[in-house]
Length: 252
Image (cartoon, rainbow, N blue to C red; front, top):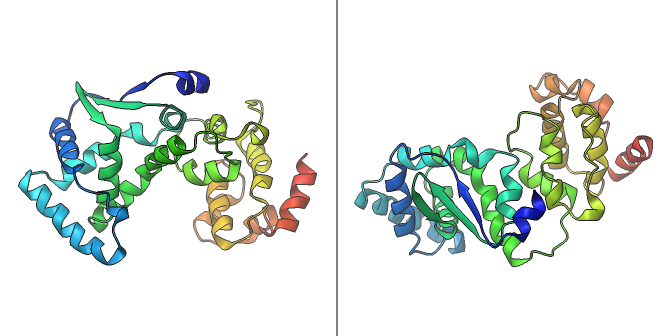
């Protein structure tokens, strides 16, 4: 499927039927796209920008609830959607019968990121869509397993192994993991682990702990819930490069 998406002149995405005033939301996004993206502004201007954006919402009689309903659609957080979006040469979005320009979508995500604390959690879930611009600028750039998983491992799937397998088309060929559904999610996790060997910081450790929970690695659940680190430390005593290198030797 990845080859189909990357070879196609354009990829059409349908995110679902019109509901929760989605037609109005799309019209509003196109109108709001006439302004510069928030992230391009200096930090000290973002508060002012947030107020201007709220005034724009008021003028259009657009509620935050309507916007959040659109960005809360399950489509945006599905694992297998990532390659569909990121590999497409041209991406066109449809909701009901309305067409949404991807530039307007990206711009709205940028605006909402600094709009209100209540929107932060929802927008964080869909921020990965902005990576589309990076992929378009540098389609031949070599992308590593750790980079792609760090960006997209929060996306949802029915089979926890798809959290890894669904990303492989985005990884450079020499860094891909062989797709093998005879492996358990836990076994697959330990195969992925050495790809994070260059990093040993606390953030990487936390990321891998959370990934371990999602991949159903025995012993991660209690640590994820804050009940101690004993089980985690037995499975993953350190994230320093030497430890991960020894783990990689034992796995392969």
